[in-house]
Length: 188
Ligand code: PRP
Image (tube, rainbow, N blue to C red; front, side, top):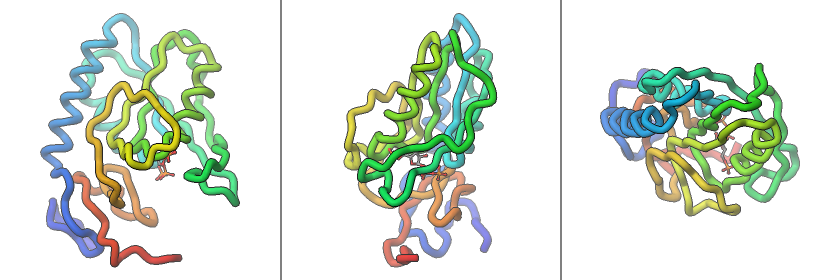
């Protein structure tokens, strides 16, 4: 399968935001962040795997000193996260964040359960400041309130892929955001 730039591959319905729109918005958010965090290095914490593409693009456009670290999570079966399942850290940060200025970087906030859990967990480690920056915000799915400090796009209640977001681990590497064709969604 070859992905040609913004020619929608099989399985996708339409482009939601083009690569140029995504890049422009990330540049705007990077400028906001650069203007805010001027005093000390900023630590970006990415949540694997989805945030990797956004974090990388964002970090390259931030003009103040930046450190990065990653964590990975999984959800305890049998409860899915969307119905209140428990989030578990499957890969912790490599370094502590005590007294640091930290931004949690997500590809998407849906129910807010993951973000709420991660913010509580990170807050307990004594950062100087703690914020959240997300590429996408699907507020229609929200189950718990979350204050989002930086967000690129709010999206409709559709299955969106690209820029790190996947369907069955595919499409993460698209530079644009697209709506998955509902006919392509299979039960397995
Ligand atoms: C996504 C995203 C968040 C979470 C948000 O991860 O990266 O971590 O879902 O959902 P919530 O607001 O409903 O809690 P996903 O489980 O798709 O894993 P991935 O990043 O590896 O694709």
